Length: 144
Image (cartoon, rainbow, N blue to C red):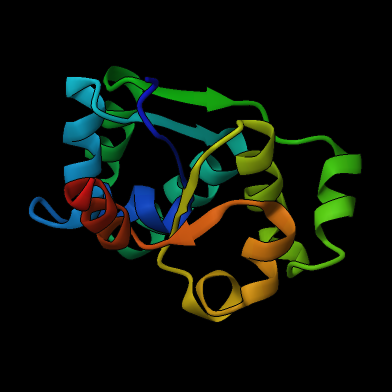
């Protein structure tokens, strides 16, 4: 059986770099052991680097090192067509993230974006993704 494929959005990447003890960092450890497959896309990486650079610049080198050395597959940004399709049910600013997770055939979209992703049921319904926090993913993995 293949390990679950987890798409890390910018907020999850930020948290993984920023907090040494949080659920997002634990997902990175599970990626190293092969218990999960970690994916993201160029759009999410750019957003995470920009946000870390602005909010926690001392953590920027760590995020860059994590992306360069850990087994995280970084897909290109999704096509304009994919983004436009997803923008029918997601805020335009988040459409490249959801489209990227769909393109990557992710099982989970790991995010902390409650306002635009986690609490908007139509996102999970229309995308076919489990849109959850890293902590929710860990809880599901531990219960299986």
